[in-house]
Structures are given as structure tokens and as C-alpha cells.
Image (cartoon, rainbow, N blue to C red; front, side, top):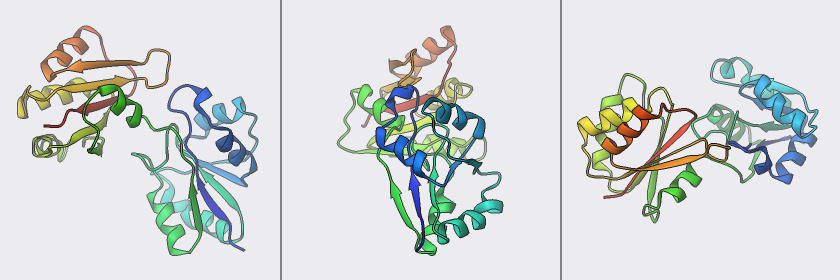
Length: 223
């Protein structure tokens, strides 16, 4: 009988957000695939999870994919986690999912943490419809990515790093303007969680006075 792949969300900040079911699943699996074994070991040590950890990320997924698929075919139960949040949301994993579907291996995804949902709710914007665009490109296609935001009427949510969030706001202001409100959340579920709202000019001024730290979720109000 074939095994099963479990997609297991992990906390985006506070370890207390880990679900009982996720802990049980990780303890009972034959293997845990993770982005960074050092980061995931901290999580496993905290919850006394002794399941073997194996690296699975964009740099090695093509090399190790067939090995883990064969393990699943042979009956192994494997969990996939990311460094934080739900795997495949701007994280590796699509290749593994596709290969499991191709080989008729069952997949089960546990509900759990992801950073953009709390940020959306915190924004106070209209959430009857929204679109998630992930990370803007670093270089090629970045200008087109940002300019296309002006063509989207729904609430928009993106991820951005602390090193590029001010650059994003400056480019957004230059190419789109100050008409739509934005809400920026950082350090979701952590001690220094913070949400700032305003137009691009307001937020640029804020982050130039207060250097950005942590991971950022940018929410842009609907038209």
C-alpha cells in the first residue's frame, strides 16, 4: 500500500500557534521534509519531535524528488513543512505535489498558520474579494508587476522583505500614486507585531524614521 504526503503548517511567529494535530502528525511520520533542518530542529526540539529531518528546498528538489517519491510509493508517511507558515505559499513544494498526483499518492493538507490572513484582517479593508500576488520580482519584471497593481480593483496582498519594502513603496508611489490606502503588517504573531496604515507617502516617511525589521505583508485597499 502506498504511503501519504502530509502538508503541515508551522507557526509564523509564536510557537504556541502550533496545533495539536500538527504535532501528532510530525511525531508519527517516517520523515519530515523541510527547507532548513537547523530551523526546523528548533521547532522539533521544542515539541519533542524525534522524526528524521531531511532538506527539501529549491536548490535540491530536482535532485532528491524521485527518492522521496519512491519512499511514498513504498508506504512511507512523509510530512512537508516550511520554515514558517503553510508550505507552498511562496515556499517550495509544488514539484513534490505534482509528482505525488502523477503517481496517485494521497495528499492531505492540515489547516494552519499563514502570514497574509491575519494581515488582511488587520487591514480593515474590504475582504469580500482579494488577490494574493506573493513576492514582487527582485529585478526583471518588477516594474511591470507593480504597475499592474493599478489594473486590479480587488484588495491586494503581497509579501516583501525588510530590505525592499521601502523600495517597493517608493516605486509604488512613483508608478501608481497615493490614492489607494495601504496596510503593512510585520512580525505577525511575534512579540513586536505591528500594523501601519496610510498612503504610500505616509508609510515611506514612517519606515525612513523607523528602519524596517522582520517579514512584511503589504495589503493594498480595493478601488
